[in-house]
Length: 317
Image (cartoon, rainbow, N blue to C red):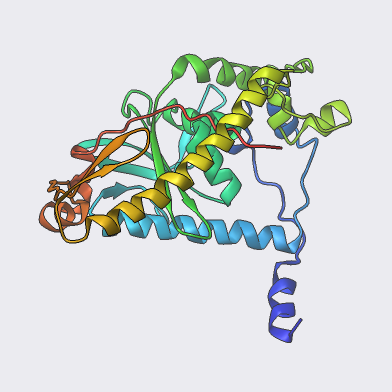
């Protein structure tokens, strides 16, 4: 490693900053998790590389703010003028990434830079896969400053390596967040010590080892069954599908050559006859690029509709 690399790493090898006061980022869906964070019972010591990764994430999030402005969106209270909100009776402070105007409606904005695994997980399962983020954005929306003034949060993630963005609008859900905030107030203002309770969140929580002395594997969406007939059927189907695709493509090329410059061909086989017909198909499509040039990128959400579908993938293991 060269002197420049060594120097960069050395600049991040500093003592952990003095612990700042408890903020919204320490709020946890599990009351005991909030208790641990409030009393700093499981402090994390970041090495130089971890600090560099977090710093890189902050730079990428700033870059996304630039992209949003470039696309023509109206933004308020973004870095370096982030607003401070206060949550619960304890008035725990937090700093949302800002407010954004989409289709003439002002709502909250939160930006996260993610690795490939986390980016893919958000695209597949949404914010439910990130309990900490879910609590964070809903806490902001329930704050003194924003409750009743925003309907939801535009949660925008960017893949760190490819710069691909992905966003989803999460409506405010007070029935979810209010009990969590009430538990936080009891811990801070009432001195409450919650009981440890093993629950599905333990598989997604960094405190699992602190609570139970071991990491917990999240098996809530995993199952193992003996399905001999179905598995064999799937295997045979895959074999016939691959063979059929190969034969179909090979025959298509041969018939295309036989068609030549004609537009119609009748071909006889031993068990069936086929018609080979050339046609020119014209279609009209929606061009995002042309729309943006004519009307601006900030108006694109007015004409886009999101569709969701379930996808089941099967692979041999």
